[in-house]
Length: 235
Ligand code: URA
Image (cartoon, rainbow, N blue to C red; front, top):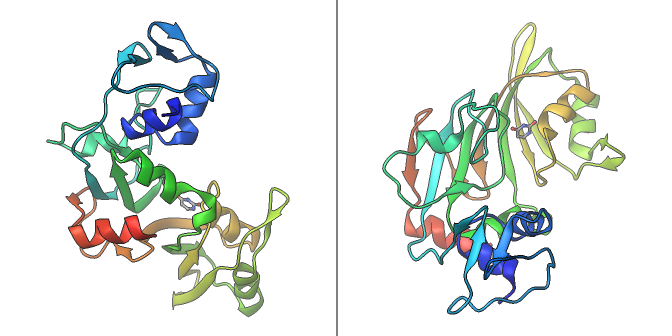
């Protein structure tokens, strides 16, 4: 099995991230640093160390939905010692990690798992899984601005894919928008809204594909049920 696939199955990180870790010289096979991506390992014989720690296949797969509060970072460890999302998951011994990310000041639905294969699949750009957000923005976008958001705007030289955008509620100086995007570009919703001069004041993710946050309270988490897990695997 290829080293990066084995690392993903062990729950280290997605395949892509594992490849980066290999290139960074953080992975040893039988005590030798490996930086070649095609390297094949035998999980029954070879000893693989990542950052000096032996990895092994995760037996029990864990799938968790978290309602992320503001102030938590979607990483496993933060170099500056800031709070990370896994700090909120108590009582789970498996090494889980977030599937994709939400900005520190974004709340809402975040998945965590130790299923590297599934995480890799869900994050792959080809999947185009719809993600829905509720955004409170400054001012009230007019028809043209809403149309721009729907049709796509050019961010860093590349047009965003068509989005679904609805106004949920208008106030004098702000509006609540329901926005569904199919990509996961960095700070995408905020950049889209900034582009039409309606900066985001608050952002919450309410669904990923058919998975919905529902009534899960802020800062709380729960295991996905078998139906939800099967759905994710079927995507
Ligand atoms: N878009 C953003 O701008 N931020 C997020 O956290 C998620 C989507």
